[in-house]
Length: 539
Image (tube, rainbow, N blue to C red; front, side):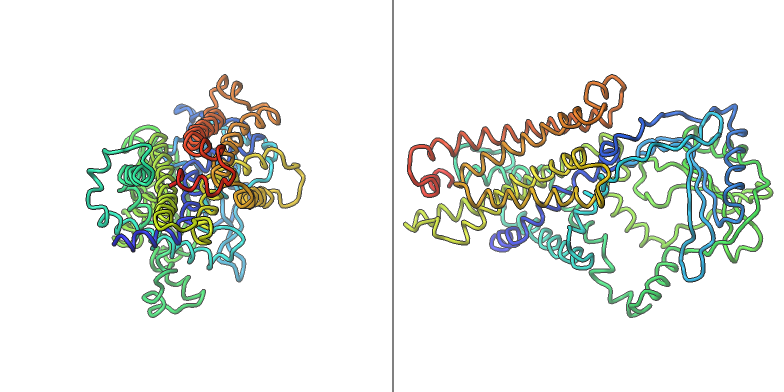
């Protein structure tokens, strides 16, 4: 088990560090996107006055009837606070037209309305093109510059090996929970093992959950045989499978509802309480006769079954209550929904998302300490046998990759935010250039780690990451009017929280740089051969 734990963790450790480092910000992906589009105005949290609800909803229906009289569905999103990372949802309308021949979906559109009057709000200034927080989130499982199928299979293999590493690590470290309360600084290999044990046990349930649920995400990609035997493996068969699993209906056009939607909303509020309604949908399913229905959906109030919130169904003409529909997919679909919700933290409020964020950073620390521990053990082993460690290509390669990944990747991620503020607004493929900046900076840290003595590379790249994060709020202040002081004065905690988080990360890397500098650099100053001189100290 110790052998299995060591090698499964090592061979995929750098990919897993990348996955954790890019996936952890995903719990704030909508907030990051807002920061990366400073042209968008601050969200105004205004609810529809109860006395004007009928008039405001009536104007929303008027607008939908004017824009899409033959649509297959209308949706009115009421202002509410979503507990998911989307945050405050503004008053808006959305419609979907009938699909054209050869297309699965029709053209859709949406507009924002004034919650006080129901009038159409003026269009926002077109924000800058950016991949935003969603781009970081997608990169943690789609990687970059790789075909989609290759990327998710590579990440799946690494995830499976991580699950093996976690389980074998629990078995191999039979005193892992006792050692969780033990830390012996300045003891070389023993200190790294203590740190690795501590961060591993601190969030062990999170690591098991996030790893296993990550495999569930693409379960039919990794294990397609059962589905393919029943339905086939082509695209049409795949669509038939999901249509049956999710109980998808074809839709048909409908006339404007005769029922009083405001009265139905009041009825739903009496049942669920105020500020618990997310949306009102009008649609008609093919096969349900001529009866169109109004579906009122409950907000995602922290329940684990995120994809199936509570709903009330009414006849669109009479307003009569319709029977509840069973959740599509049954218990199997419910289980998958819960697993995906746990993985993405969609049920969590702001403090729950911060807890996920901290656990993600602990995941980076677990992987990073494990990678460093391997090189420390190998150096001690080779020094004890009298061999020159620096002549061992494998050890040197792992050390360079460790420096470039653990100390260099954070610097590259900070370059993502630099690029967002510094790239010309009119440049073509602007969002792609944000990613190019990340990988160019990361490649630069790899060459830097190869060219510099090991100890100095660690210290200098850690200080580089500190400086890169510390300058993000400065560049933001120099290029926009949404700097930290203005954000705090306006109560805009999305912008203020982002800048403060960058400052906090800079302080964290400064602390790491100081610790490493005190440990490694004194020895490197006293000898002529920095690689060999620091070998014993590093071990």
